[in-house]
Amino acid sequence: MSKNIKVSLLLIVLFMTAVQFLFINKLTTPRYLSAPELLVNGFYLFPESKAFSDFTLVTANNKTINQDDLIGKWTLMYFGFTRCPDECPIAMSLIRNLYATLEQKDFDFSDKQAMLVTIDPENDSPEIIDKYAKAFNQNFIGARANRPMLLSLATQLNVMVVEPPSSHAHHSIDHLENHTNNILLIDPQGKFFGFFRPPFDEEKFLLTFQSVVTPR
View 1 (cartoon, rainbow, N blue to C red):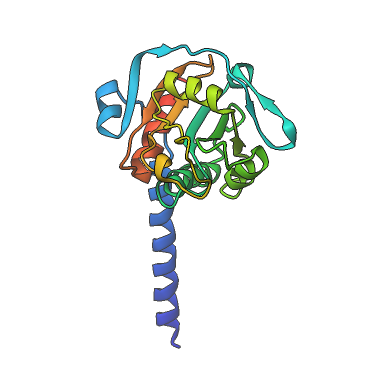
View 2 (cartoon, one colour):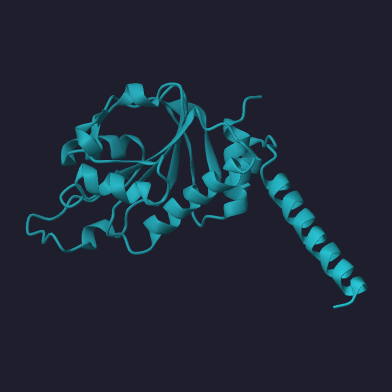
């Protein structure tokens, strides 16, 4: 291979690397958006954050989670279940990719957390749902509530959760398939701040998330 060809290939590689760096840098540079801009990009911001009552969730090793665990942190909360065929893996992968991209920019996650709450407590134990969440990112939390607590929390957060019929067969997921697919955002005061709406787009998710959680 001639010297000129080697130089040309090196320049191409350097150019591609620079383009990739600029693309990631653009995505991960916070830009503050107005409420209408957020909405256009898939995030609905409440005019005023909504308080909701205390709750108790259980994660692996019988550790409990309640309202106090939300204070001081921005929390991405998603309601799903481990046997979900499509929507849940897509949403959880979106959050995983958000973390991966921002970690490359040394984004501060010390006051951020991601939590998956199962809507199938009859089949998802705390250990199972936590293991499922951590398969996407070791820092993610998977948690379970008993059915009455789940219904109370989900109702307050505008999440549709359907209780299984009395003749429920444990292998059936018919009552779970129409669950609300929003990704919720809880603010550091432990209040319902807004939600990301499907269809999800990674670039828009990055843009809106950073706009909302970055101090002004």
